[in-house]
Image (cartoon, rainbow, N blue to C red; front, side, top):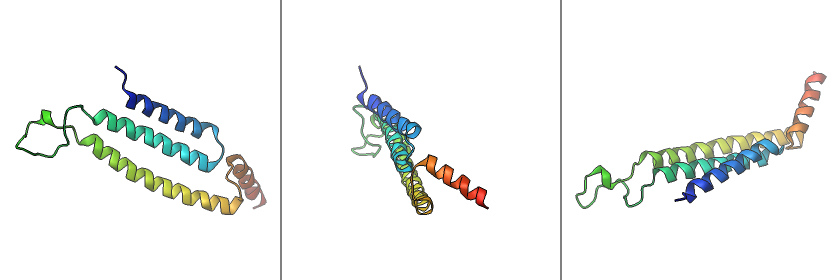
Length: 121
């Protein structure tokens, strides 16, 4: 039996990782990082789901742990999403500052321009 969610999570992670490796544009790298995060969150959520079980809310007097899914993966995914949004916001603000200073988002050009700045000092 093929787990489609896991396969899609691996593909998403791979797409994001290749974007981080091969693109020189900072915004494209940031998009790749977010795609990697999405793949990781999908993988964690799919690992935490057990078919036939319900959310861990005690209802109808059922208190057996075998009737419920583990809430820890869902908590990890929610925490990861909050951290990912925060990191994205900080990275975008730093990208805007780099663009205002060097007028480019290409990492190679930023490196060359920063080397020229340091030589002029």
